[in-house]
Length: 367
Image 1 (tube, helix red, strand yellow):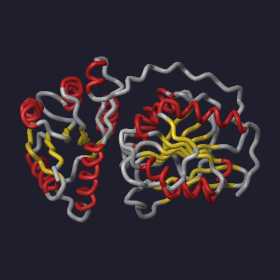
Image 2 (cartoon, rainbow, N blue to C red; image 1 turned 90 degrees about the vertical axis):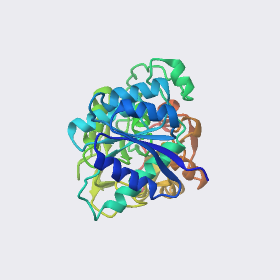
Image 3 (cartoon, rainbow, N blue to C red; image 1 turned 180 degrees about the vertical axis):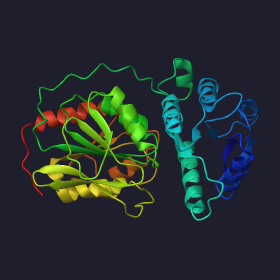
Image 4 (cartoon, one colour; image 1 turned 135 degrees about the vertical axis):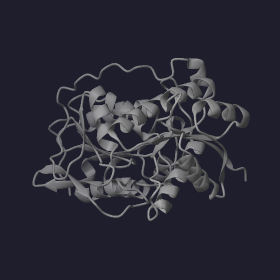
């Protein structure tokens, strides 16, 4: 078996050594070079042609964002960003994802011991996901570079038109799950939705400290209101609610109203928040009023719950393989019979609205 070749770029020798130790402990990957700055990294990348690069965001001489842009233009390679757990770090991280980075991890704490195994699993899982990624670059101005990476160049979308309040008074709502590649996939869908769309509850695999920044960025570019979910708040049409990075998000009811419920439980399928938890709550509350959407991501989190939700009466859409960064979670859901439709990313919003238009009217509440 050919090992995944990884180049680690970080200005801290301690972090480089720690990352090297974690990567080299795995049977399917190896650190082929480390670099303290982008200039040395550039020579390693040219010489070794790595499968994956881990890239620190904050470095001397040239920051990680500028270097990422150069990598994407000159030698497109799956990149996992290493980010600081700060507001500034979160903003820069999402900029990196927009530029084509596959995923990110937070910078390890050098004094951690109890959580090191979980941290090592997170890093190596993301490296595997990056290696498996069907790489898509949609933001580069140089289309030849995007084509070189196998990218689909997506044209800017026109602002969505309001739907005459057709759905605002209905009981319909949307539950959405995603992981690797999901931040951009979610943006593509939400940007196409009008202000009177049904409410949307979203679980995206993401660490605590990043989900509020993610929601705020989406809120700036979408017509609907996007926010980080809070416990007990009423779920309203024209709103999307993002699961906090350290809590499970569940759909609940309070009388006639839907509400967000946050649960501080154990990880499910190694994730917290977990798509499985969100979709399972949909089955328990009102499955016949739910449209489930499964987007790009590694693994199978949410697949079984999506299949169960469909059996209970939901209508489900899965992202297709060609438009996924990683076709893991949708593939598993499809294999279990959880999908009513399998749709390209840039068509999911349209298919969602078409389905809502077709069923029309106020749906009966069936618990």
